[in-house]
Image 1 (cartoon, rainbow, N blue to C red):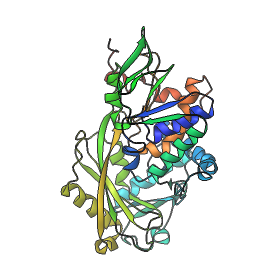
Image 2 (image 1 turned 45 degrees about the vertical axis):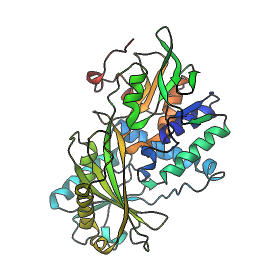
Image 3 (image 1 turned 60 degrees about the vertical axis):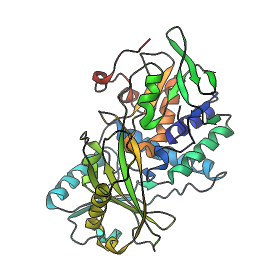
Length: 380
């Protein structure tokens, strides 16, 4: 359930392993969260732990599948540009250096640099800069379609405009789904519906604490490339890890292959409210000017927003649901779904086929201790 990038990566991995796969989406593939992000493949924003391990594994997998998805599909605009994280206050510099040191111990490449050597138009008043060469970027909608195309080549079927309405059960076991196009029977059902996964899970008889977390991005008009890496301020890491529902903004700035500049980011929990608001845009723009003052003279041509799948303990949910045999989840990646998609597909396939996983599967289990207080028994 779900033809975004996580569902696409799972479909490809399962199909390559010889599993018969049908992907369902109530709208169009790559039509939700996967089309509303910046295409980040980041390790720079993740502290030591399970998510960082999953991200490092994912980067390896992204590089390994590039030849496969590049040979038969338009470019996914993969760019190993590296990330530059910048502090703008003395306190921020201290915190940034300390955070980078913990990441190095966990296998992340992170070098203290003069930011102006990497970004000549960066605000010269910045107080510290750390360069992360492993950070990269893809065009997320194209990458999703490329993964789906690869899944199809291995036998997967993708059905768009098919909505899951309820469960098909054999006793206590989930054995398929009742959809807007009739019943579909399966040995396993995987919910990979991003921020809509909470509702999708409810339709199948379980509660899952996945909620939408709104984000908004500004897009400038085309210009000569003056920003060469993904650049963000050190406040971004704190915003990602916060549980605060109120508006939070931090500066994330990068160029695209098309010549535009993407400016983010915001985080706010307000349900599925799709409004683009001036208060959010102005806050995002103001933060960007602290990093790159020259942007004050650059025109913005549009803004767009999307919803990240938020989970209270900030870890994805990947694996079987012990409350309903036959039901699996792959959701809750929040803003890291693009980078984590490939390793999520591998992990779920490893678990389903009883293969030894490459990462700690228990950290992402549905019934992990940090998520248990938010779970209810299965219904019906």
